[in-house]
Length: 380
Image (cartoon, rainbow, N blue to C red; front, side, top):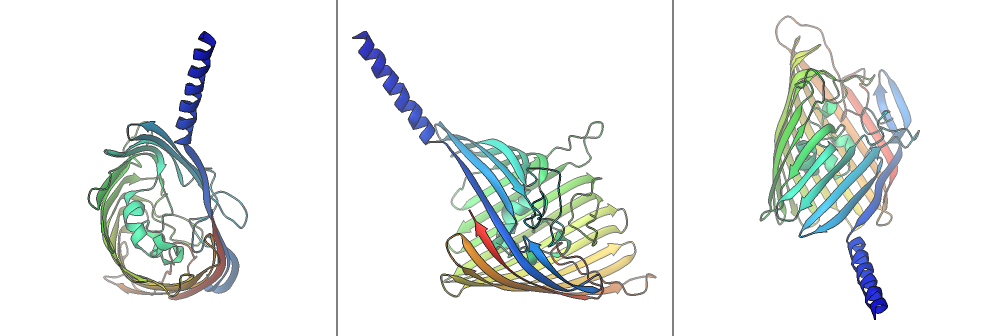
């Protein structure tokens, strides 16, 4: 009899263990994007090149969840970006050829706790509120990286994430949700350098989605922020960086239209004094058939620098077509055009133009630049 009771207890324990494991999962996921691109002017010459992540980032990752019971879960994510052309880590930042990085999990690496009633708390390398709330409302967030704003000045292009960050995301309350992030500098002797924090809020009701964000970084001595400003991939360091903006999408039938405004301010940069960018983006996606989608956007960017006293105006137009071969694979054709005009105040003089398509294509030697790319994407 004792043997039978012991056997029954073992069976119950086994079933409980199996039930616990059934509530846990680890998923491998990722995205691959490779193509052939043409740019009419890169430092005075035309360019043909294999592209990496021209439309969607190249990355792979692991995400996991463990059900702890009572509406609680333990979660994690490890995510690496890479250049599909040469296989090196990095590749989603400086240009269409891809950049390199010594970090393995250069996009995201975090662990946290999630509760269905109280929200989610995570710690590790993570994206800021601009990426979480505003990027999904932009054309860049809908899978067209080349539609990000000049120099990726507001990080709509999601070209950097934040190390040593703690983040909170609320549950959905009748369509409304909010969140915030704080990134520690972890700098011995000067904890103020490199600290970053951001907050965001969003609302969704049927066809309408709206969001607003604020992001601030103090004493950016590392320079790993504002997107690239030069063909050599150098960054724009600043003492204080502030980004804020609002955006919205509205869907009717097979079409989605979007409107967004962001402002990025860089105070006390090393070479240009204070810099300000205002970006106004209008975008649209239209599903012509279940397999064929047409996309487009126009962004006007007004930029000013105090040293020397300059004003820049970027006009960026992007358009593309995407055809789904299957649920996971698609082919695309996309093009982008940018025109930059400049004006001066005070004694500065002469002409100076600097194109910068999405912080991805090195500058043109003239005030105009055109890029065209065709490629294949595969998501898993």
